[in-house]
Length: 498
Image (cartoon, rainbow, N blue to C red):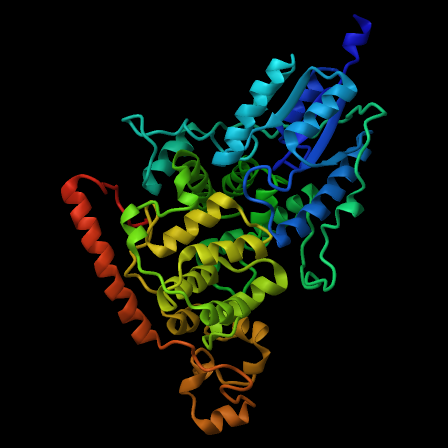
């Protein structure tokens, strides 16, 4: 009996790389047994291997997590391989009878979790699952008819009504980790890029403490003007918390509580806090949709859009990826993405619209590029947001809403701070011509040191012609949609995001 009391429990870190507000970790420590904190790098554990930028972040986050655990008297055990096989190996080594974990809700990961639970039960091990990544578990926020919401605003209202008001659970004071189980050396994983190291411009501090610091700065400096400032790419007015959220270095509940507290204390207007909370709920909406409609990662949510006659344009795709389309706001965004692993939200919408509607390239090509290059690459958000822009998603923007990259630049970057930062070859061009340099007189271009086609490309597509082509293609989709509605096949709820 004494031996049984000291048998450790396993805590499996996943997308919850934090100690505070971590329900599964809190429950594992509360057993009073030694805890084995383990992270398993499963290169294909859920069917969507990490992108290169995500691996950069993961490397730093795991190192920070290990340091945090060591301050509590513990350590992080690292394993690489098949998650189920590595857990079973650890169970065999330690005779553990309990595995604690926070569930993942992406369709393939969710199915693998269920399979794991059955496997563990068969060998006498109890699997304890919790929710640490979302405000509410998918399937718990349903319409009055008991069905998943497909429109954002009623989903948000229903979700926020169920959100409990409670203080965050603090990090454990002590995590007792028994000696013995072997751990990989994270250096051997080689997650940091080399030959070349393309991450030298990454200005991030991964880890729980980094997330807390970013939240504090955001509330102090940007939350008070969030509703307007969030659209200005030349200002640091967004939270930049998305990668911390994706890796679970901070919980969405902690964010909601923090901004609500700031509003209740009179530091910011409630409307500003509500606007930020709406963005957190949009992330939640994406996660719930993908969980309940798993085909979304491969196909259009609105099936009539699968008839879209996308173009194959390798040269255009390469120009888009490298920030050489000839449209300054688009190119600035793509260069910011490559240099920093992140892109401003307003610009994300513009560059996505450009790929899908100006170049008429399948949204899945853009989603794949974002998956590899974003440090905050999140399957549900990535798929949902690309389909939102493409018009094919739930509660999506109408396809005929086609962003004009010139007027978007003039409206949201009027002084050119953003474009000039990322496109230095246009830095000397006057504001009047900055967002459409091909319209500038030759003398203006010459004085600014700009030679179109040499120092900076001419537009690879004409906006008016591209818009006309996209709208013509929409007729095919609209025809399919009308036929489907008549046949009762393509019935969908509203398509306009509030």
